[in-house]
Amino acid sequence: MAEATTQTRRDEAARMRADAALDGAVRPEGAAASLVPGLCLLTGASGFLGRQVARELLRVPGVRLICLMRDTTKVAAAERLTGILESVGIDRATSRDRVEVQLGDVAEADLGLDAKAYRGLAERVEAIYHCAATVDWVRSYGQLYRMNVGGVLALIKLACQARTKRMVFVSSIAVCFSRGGPEHIDEDTDMLPFIESMPLGYARSKCVAESLLRQAAERGLPVTVLRPALIAGDSASGIANPEDMIAALFQGCIATGMAIDTDWLLDCVPVDFVAQVMARIPQGEGRYRVLNLMHERPRHWRELILWMNLHGYPVSLVESEAWLRHLFNRRHGQDTMLYVQRRFFCGSPSLEGGDAQAKPYEAYLAASQRKIDASATRRLLKKQGLNEAPLDADLLHAYFDYYRGAGVLPRRSLDELERWGLDEVWHGPWHPVSSELSLERWRTAVFKRIGSDDGLLSEIAAARVKGGVGLWRLDLAEPGAGP
Image 1 (cartoon, helix red, strand yellow):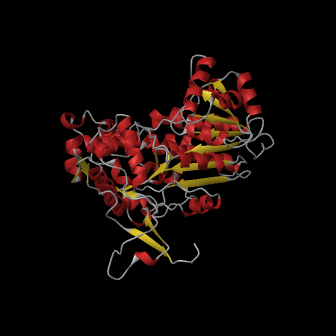
Image 2 (cartoon, rainbow, N blue to C red):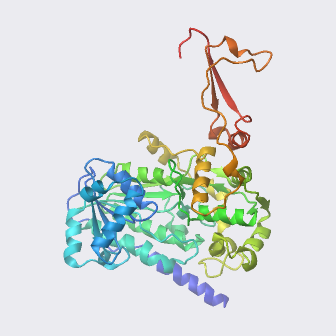
């Protein structure tokens, strides 16, 4: 049995390396399309990220979209897409004038198009934004190949034909996690040599796709690869993906009243931020650029458990093995959203490179997270004026509001609690707050809650008791002084 398993892993490794080699005949064959956004092909427009990318692209003057859709008829696909885009604020007039539908399937050869339609698409499109993917932390590389690797290969071929198109691809920060991988991983690190040590088939499929794109860029195709961490909800509306790992973690822990006590940083980036980066980052000719989209201030998992408790959901931290035994047995955990992810947490011999004792989640804990360097990405984003929303108490409150409304979380006593009790600014008159400080003499006194950079604990404590507790900054101005 052991020899058979070893041979299977060798066969998988050989297949992945073969899949990662781009055919020498695939190379740009025409003049480069304009670097100014024009007619863009968008995949995954109906998805959680794709619809946000559509919105951001349509905010750029002159941009028009062709959205690749699977449906029975073009009319049905167009109507479905219009409704999806309306959900993110794109009105029907904009959809009618600037968005068109192309029936097809990214996982099929030539996108499932006949020769005439394929050639027409190749001649018209100037840029490709590829969001479509199968996001699954349990399936094997072989099960994910068709969509996550074959789809990228089909789009590379399209990008190279007729005119050389810019290509922007959504990968995953998961490619940076491998057992025994490099101690420092930045945007220039090629992770293909470490692919066999990646615990997830999903990460492996994204790594192979990146390798194909890197080779295409070396031949002159302009490529940008985004590696986002977990994609969280919209930072403005709080609307999140009710079926992703973040929702499943919250739902599973709250449903059982137990959370794993482990050293993990909840590194997530709001979906609207990822979409803004994808739509607005400039792309140079023939350049391969990778962006590690990690939050500058991730939250420790234990902070989030405290948040749940102060938010009206009693959850206790439990030693990891006890939590795994409780949550992933059929009697306790089968009704939780996390149960389908049991192989990610508990391990399985069927996960490539693993064994019965390996637990894939352990490869994604804080020690490994801290090896990843996103400093070059952050410098570029700041230069472009792009900043992610802080993972602070207000944003967490918005997410929990959405999860309750979507039925992911039960309603609790939080519905009876008041919102934050303090306004951002008050103006006198004031009473002295200590024997050494009299506020009466000051023209204005401005209280500001100290932000998330200085600690979530202060924020959530203040929120729970109507703002009376926590760390606050007091700015004072004397009479006659300037602002």
